[in-house]
Image (cartoon, rainbow, N blue to C red; front, side, top):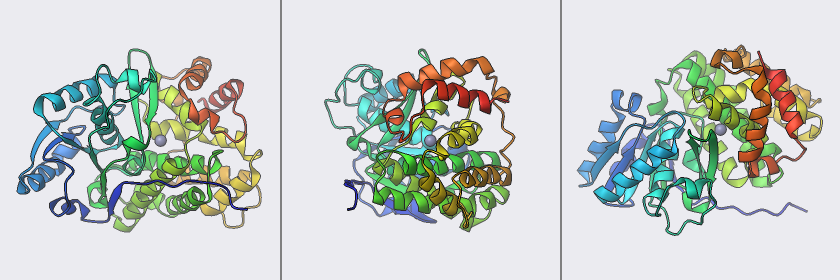
Length: 384
Ligand SMILES: [Zn+2]
């Protein structure tokens, strides 16, 4: 008997080289745009100007907010929301890495709901008004936020990094154009690609995985296995870049249908205390110990994933961990260390506390238990 599941993916998605030009043709969800971006590379590479020009051709004015940080913070969300209200913008464009798109999603909610956004993100207060529509234009391949209803926001005062969202947070339109990703440097290409991989992996081992999410998850794992090292080695390899971009978007769909597990909660705790730690790097650092912990409890799932990642003759769940470590070597990221980011071994206990306090549904999605004590062991085993 097939498992019960539901499927809801309301985002209109345009994928492929050159698809940014779609902005000229598609029906926009409003008349005055608020463009949210990190400001450096998207401006330097001319993407912001291109979007503004494409909108102008359609008579749509754009207000630019260009100070999103790598870990988007709640103060900026409140600030953006206020400008949206003052300027009368009626839709948002998030262009850049996941942080820009996530910020746009959160600002779209905060602009039409009273008070500090944190009361909705962490305080559990019910959203009163439907968020403004968002167009997501990712320029990196990793978060999959263009195809999911989640946003991750940090409160720097309280060291809380929270994943938040729901059906109202799907982008109205997403444009995934791998031409915009060609200049991402090798290290970031690797970190973001591994983030996409773990969205698929965690979605596959999560308790709420379904036949549909499984299908997408295994396809994404396969695409990453076949293409990520190529994209890292040669950033001009359009085919590899395109396939990694597709994997990232497919992983976003996995996050819509299934969800992340405690691995993501554990990483969010690390980068909440050490904001300079790139999300993907944090995941890479703990991944071998984390998946070694779970592999034996979920043997068939891990054998399936090992095969998808390229170890076609896999018979042992630990084959997945071997394939994972090999991919990290092939991408030049196997030597990443917590100590490079200032993390101390003694941080393990407070990381585990934080992961449990803020992890919510990611912790309860674990199919086999990962206790606080297990987390401490995983952090300590990963420490170098
Ligand atoms: Zn992630």
